[in-house]
Image (cartoon, rainbow, N blue to C red; front, side):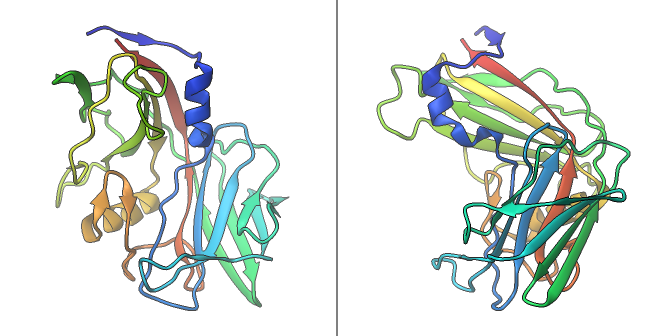
Amino acid sequence: MAMKRSVWLPLAFIGACLGCERPLNIPIKANVTGKIAVEATITNENRSQMVRLYQPHAALNEPDLPASGADVTIMINNTELPLTEFPVGSGYYHSAPFRALFGNTYTLIIKWHDKVYVGTDSPQPVEPLQSINVSSAGDGYILNQSNSGQLANFIENRISWANTSACTSGNCFETVIFYDLKNIDVNEVFKPGKSVETFPSGSYIIRRKHSVSEIYKSYLRAMLSETEWRGGYFDVQRDNATSNMSGGCLGFFATTTVVSDTIIVK
């Protein structure tokens, strides 16, 4: 097996991964009503950063309601950056393009229904990506956890075989996330709770490695330890998951430093 690194993407793959530039967020289904939840991960990538606000339903099979009409601001040290809801009524708030840089402090301020919610985080350095670990599995390949360095991190792997003859349906891509939080208790490395689907030769893997601050590490650890984890996303948030948001707001406001690459598996 040979693996080639590349920075170009065929049109078929671009179409399959239009969401690839979205920040990684953790959907929350909480056993509460009347609360607001936030999904917000801003990175060092120079682009519009996004914050999602919604009202989680108690039942897992019920849709969340957007928290629309909020006044959302990100403070960068002492500089104020307002966010705009788009589309109107969606609960998705977007900033002008900027990068979250190591050494700065970022504060998310949400004003909604006469309440104010505040969260603060600071991006940490990230180590370079190391060699990918892919092994043969029948007629295809499987992605394995590998050494990710000395600092706490998680690696998001977006796999697509949409440009190959093996793609016979519209679902020819998968996201696999490996968390390595450097804990000495429970498990040092959290692995997916189910086996990863095999993928064929010619598949593309976009890897994005995220740094993790100490408070974000605590939040992720609580979610991983106490919820059902299905390859990176969480079904239920527990009330004792450590959020950095004030006022009883669920979720987390995270800032991360990201390094990425693209690999073709041959």
